[in-house]
Image 1 (cartoon, helix red, strand yellow):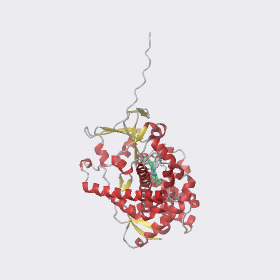
Image 2 (cartoon, protein in one colour):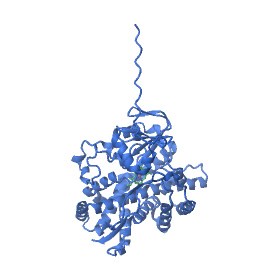
Image 3 (spheres, protein in one colour):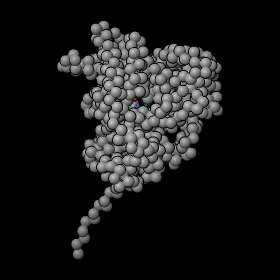
Image 4 (cartoon, rainbow, N blue to C red):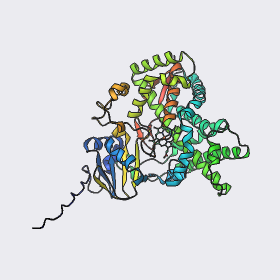
Length: 456
Ligand code: HEM
């Protein structure tokens, strides 16, 4: 009697939550993208398959499977430029390039992000933080709230510009800030609400946006031309970026490439940092007992002086506050990848060309990793309470080869900025001001964040 060879068991398809016959899961997703993905993540077994009309998106939410996707199988995926528009703005910088081009750019940028390199920049970061904080003095006790989203954005822009092009940024920083504000106001909206996708883009907004982007570009080309005409070592990352350019390129190709790199680093650095600072100051206001501990620690460590690199490790509680704020209000709320070949994640088939998504917002709220997930509790990050938690249950800076190159810098800037603010002021949410996370490219507060400034 012959026995047939055993057939491999078919790989299981990830479950699809119930949805509309035509729209699939799109309507529920559009109605509340963050909440919907958090519910799907909680109710799935680590991977779910969503249908948005004819498009399929896999949602990977368990830390083990996120590791499989972004680390173990990382090279089988490319970044998903969800908005062709984004590519038009950023071009071929570090964030959106792929393959050899990306590898070369990452190699050139990496030395700027060593602990030593970051420590050397702390005094600049602190000086710019103090200047910004002093410029808010007229708001102290005045009754008129400070629009902190715009104010923190300007601060983070200056810190990013100082880092990437050095002191020459100063003459153009205000102009860049104005262009950024117009861009933010006119950026194409992600379809919102059940019928949001049916709204046509507004041509007037698009024209204003185009002008603002051209204005920002002109400022960055100005930095590049100034540096190329009079090279100096004190020009942030520019000397290294220029030295790494392909000598075979025409000068126009070189200028274009430098613009892409600078604008990408600028945007990646300031937008996330400003958003993170906004949410941290908001949660501090909502949790007076946490704010009191931060004020005590900052007072004890600094005794009224400006923060230095040596002070930073002593901000132990502030470190946990920043982590907990990044957990609940991750400025990058989701990541998206496209499969370059057939793959499996958690044993489930992922056909080539599929879109695979990780919602940081959802994973950071999985109740079996984060008990009582909506509670703001910085002491979750105490070593004794972190023992046993999956290493990748907390991924505000992503993981794998495309993780955030600036994560360490971001935490240092956050410590310096918060300490500088807390030394001088208490920021109180303006009475009646609505607060709601808006999952755009970053997770900004939908209505901005108006706060009253009280001098301490
Ligand atoms: C709180 C602040 C920040 C957060 C939450 C954050 C988060 C992230 C995340 C999640 C990614 C991965 C995106 C993806 O895979 O699609 C990323 C990439 C990146 N970030 Fe950050 N970031 C922050 C600050 C910064 C800063 C300060 C810099 C630079 C100084 C920076 C530069 C970059 C760059 C260049 C990339 C692309 C890296 C690559 O693809 O090789 N980020 N960031």
